Image (cartoon, rainbow, N blue to C red; front, side, top):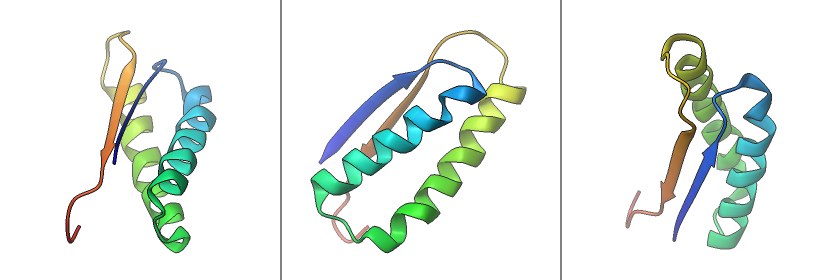
Length: 69
């Protein structure tokens, strides 16, 4: 499974990010107990990009399942 998303470089886009990860997680049939951890990591990365990364381009997120990952 591979899924991609481009979202605006704005903190209020976090809800779009969380909706995307929930859809990707469900479509891959992954264990739901890991999703909050993944969302926390992505939230930290995304907010750092928005606050400190500069620029105005959308942020792209790609999620891919890896064997044994």
